[in-house]
Image (cartoon, rainbow, N blue to C red; front, side, top):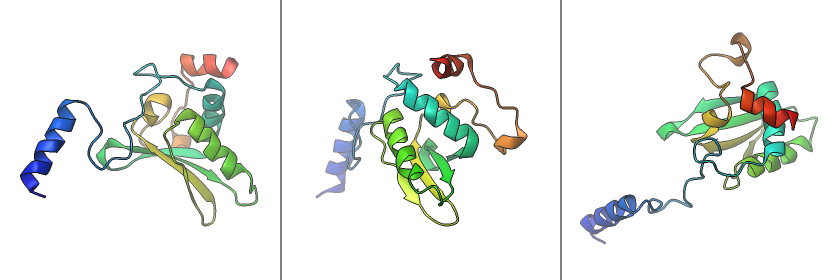
Length: 140
């Protein structure tokens, strides 16, 4: 196939707001920015895990990776964490990585919107405050 044809298709898809050719699915809308549905009980659960044993790191193309670490002696927790991540980001596909601790990871551009505690440096060296809207969700 001619490269010019492929470029033309890509431009057409971009103008129409369709997913890029070769991408699996359209981008997931953000519950904070796009007012998409948010499973609040799952979010409150995930917020606790993030504040305890999680971190967010920036990957390529402004995509962020939410990673929750888990001690291998709690063998059932990784599945529960992955299921909770899927409830917060329904199009997500959590992956588990082994080693000294099991890490459960999901990639999404919108993690910093949902976890405003994310910032430069180590979490335990920064002042961490729960936002008002997060406190309301946790209280419910």
